[in-house]
Image 1 (cartoon, helix red, strand yellow):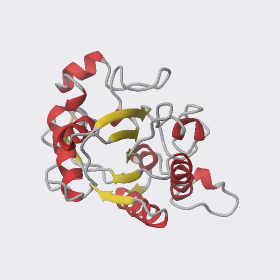
Image 2 (cartoon, helix red, strand yellow; image 1 turned 45 degrees about the vertical axis):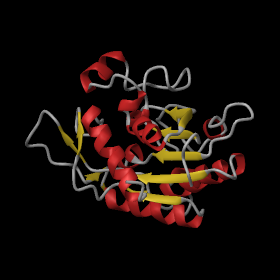
Image 3 (cartoon, rainbow, N blue to C red; image 1 turned 90 degrees about the vertical axis):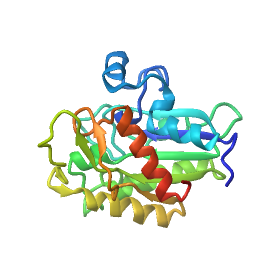
Image 4 (cartoon, helix red, strand yellow; image 1 turned 135 degrees about the vertical axis):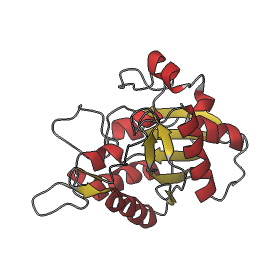
Length: 230
């Protein structure tokens, strides 16, 4: 696809939020003070804005909610889950539909130790693969012609802590399990799997998870590299 002038929409968690660029009522991570601390001056300094700018595209919608998961968790904010139609139906703008949908989700599912597949007595939405399937089915229903990128999380570092070691295991599960799950479901639903987790250059982050301006550029580079676009 030639991405020039194509419309891009984003599905994400805190890593993809930015003040004035997400729906009203959504939890925000990159507020004004955090933006300044991260060195982010505009949307072009985010991973998604960097990609869209470099490909000559246009942002249509950024449906990112800080702290959100793909899967259902009873104790999490109602309405925040990415498998909900209330979120996936908002990726267009009136009659305008996205040409490309970039999904960067899974970090909070991994941190919560979300089961990979549903076991007996469990709803599909409570598992990572099950909820990811629901999310992609909704996207396919609303935007059947969109190219969908299912991006697996990259490995990051702490810019102020040289001794920081990336926590590959959180919630009792290894990041690799979620990366493989994203790849599996993306293949099932005929979407594009973008494995950013093998990045040789760690994503520089404020706290080991949330990228600063330099880290956002590194993440954008890795996604574009895996897609064969640089």
